[in-house]
Image (tube, rainbow, N blue to C red; front, side):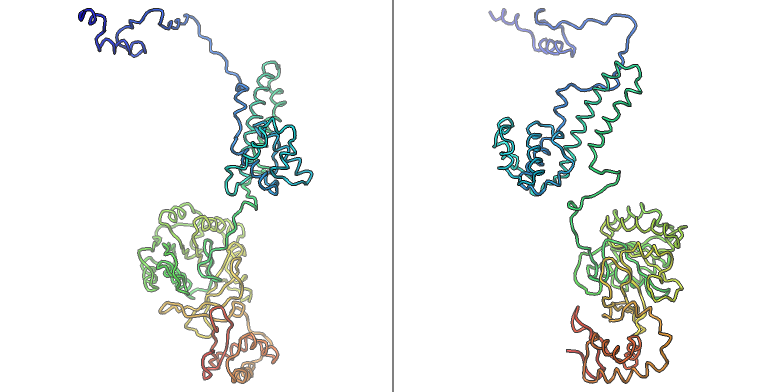
Length: 533
């Protein structure tokens, strides 16, 4: 018995060979019954090979067209419109036929009819509008379920674009099938293609947003509002280009490095309030890296966060890609370009178009990386009192800058410098100037003088004795005690003294002026009167 059983059972190796042979992987021939074998595919006949011609546009089977829809987007649109009927305008350009599911076409058509009649659109009114068709689409529970699982704030416009693209794909596939059939029966293929071109154009227009003209447009309702970021409130904006303007030798670079040094240490410039520390990049063709390091160290900056351009590099503003790579690679938060003219290459700074072509991409780069870029620039030789006319080069420079800072000598203390707001789209005008000391470098309080007063020329009609007459008048006005600058301006106008003359009288008397508190009014008083309370 044992011998008989052994003779009927194949060896393990034989069973493995049979298993692999039955699957075409080699081994011993199969011992399975012939009836269980799949007949082999007959060998092809020997003869000339005919390559079948491929159709110009083979449409998919009709059943595949039904898959060209996005159920999730269709449900989000319908659910959002039922939940909040006031958002129907966000579905502008959408029609019932754009939906790929029949029940969704019916529901959107009902919502559309209610909108045209000016009636409320909610779950109850939509169900009533559907009437007898409600049962065919799944009943009231199906309509109610559309509101389930909605995002917290669904962006209807985004889902409308998805639904329209799916509808465009269905239209294009159907047009392709019709074109293929027409080509097979046509004697003039080019004419036939022209006849169907309109259907493909319609599909392309359907896939694009309404009014698409090739521009990347944002709808106002979809734009997130943001306040303009500031480094120093009312004085130095962030994430844009800032012009630092003044005559040669006025310490513009010193001021820029003072601001950068504070930021590298995590201090807000001037106020000293804590802020996230930033890496600093200085691109200078004016000073050597050694001198920049010395100035940065003297201002108290963190040298480990300072990066300086090698003067031999020869980088120009026309090559923004390299600057962008540096900002991204070193996580730069503050850039100083010293100066605009030396980095502009062959660009004509008197040409409006060429200056705009340099500055607008630079501004976009600052916004992209949330990085402030300070552009040091010079004044021209004009004696105009208009600070916009004092900027060297084309007016396009001032137009491109969102904010400009002018540096000037403090009339009340020639040892100090003033930081004054010039042209600005981001900061209010006529805010108090900030004082800083070039040697040793540091901040030195505020000043009530304005940029207009800095550039204002003395009146031709003003005689040489105007200041002599204003000095006793100002002393008498301040003798009772401190007086608000606003009240003093009114008294001076009544007495016939120009404000520029009063300021010169102030310097002659040594009058002190300070704010009563941060953001408060300015007060003037005589040195012997004591500080304002």
